[in-house]
Image (cartoon, rainbow, N blue to C red; front, side, top):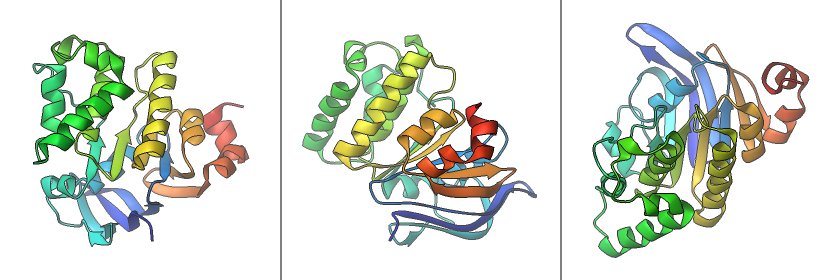
Length: 237
């Protein structure tokens, strides 16, 4: 049974539906990507999963629990970490204070201390800048901090919204390499929303293509990479 299963999800903002009968799944310990152009509804999917978007019909199930109608805070406590677009870093707090915010719901002090060392192991630059105000970090460092803050929750599922946006190619390669290591070593499942289709398909096991709020294609990531329509429209060859 999948860790996350979304069935016929329809919803949006105000009276307008943005998503139309969207269905997809994320396997335990797997990596799923949702691809699509700007405005396709990718971010709206993640917001629906976090209780931040009106769901008019359909079902969201995480670890056999229904998420429909749950408050965002309750969803986080179930083990879903969200790295939003724009990173959502607390700019006036230091790097370390941001990480402590990520661990706020936890009571296991020894485990939290372990996880500080773990995320500093993945992102040594953050350790060097642990007393630095987050607003003074580079874009790449802020993205690393946003991912690390979500990991401090010790999530079972990590939602990543456009982690490559606005970053230099070398920084992006580095972040994606670390995401692969986190998935393998920590067994954290990942749902990745990404415009850089080439990178996303390289990282993911399973892919879904979203156009105007509807899933138009899905399957193993390798298969989508070979599909002519995906190659032409999203991979540029």
